[in-house]
Length: 117
Image (tube, rainbow, N blue to C red):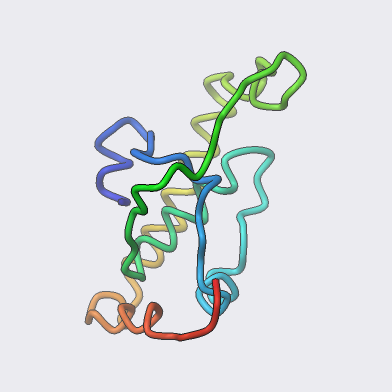
């Protein structure tokens, strides 16, 4: 997911709002990023670096924009704000990629937990 996200100009192939994540993985990653927006993207990209995931073919979200929502505000898509958020998300993912356990393939153990997401 991380490489796809970078190759697609920091756009995900899925909407991150629909993420279902194991609690222990969520805690290990430190939860959602402390960003004014794109915090769900940051969590999904980080999780994809150290864990196996899959896509469900079922509809998980009906996305409707309305004028009062935060992502409709011009500050959400303002270039310098958006680029700063993407750099922070990328920095987190790159730090995870460079962890020895991830580089050695040990990170795949996150999905073996039987606890509910």
